[in-house]
Image 1: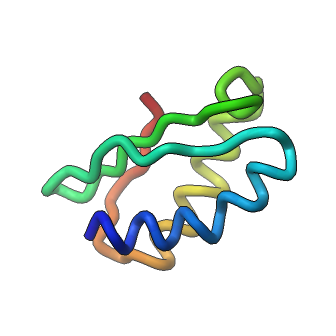
Image 2: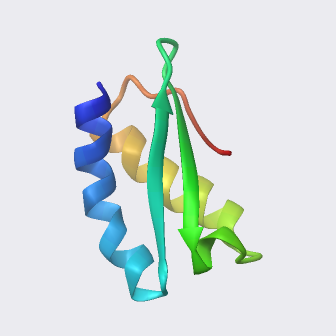
Length: 73
């Protein structure tokens, strides 16, 4: 499943990079929780949680239906 998540993240990264940010995959747990680290300008942006939940999580769940939740660490 980790490879599927990385592939889906590669679709999201250009949008994040356009604003000076990025995302690193930290872990995919056996119960479907994806742990990400927002980097660059995304790491300190006040809108990062909205980006994470409404953008990244939504796309990841579409691409990899086994995902239950996406969290930032």
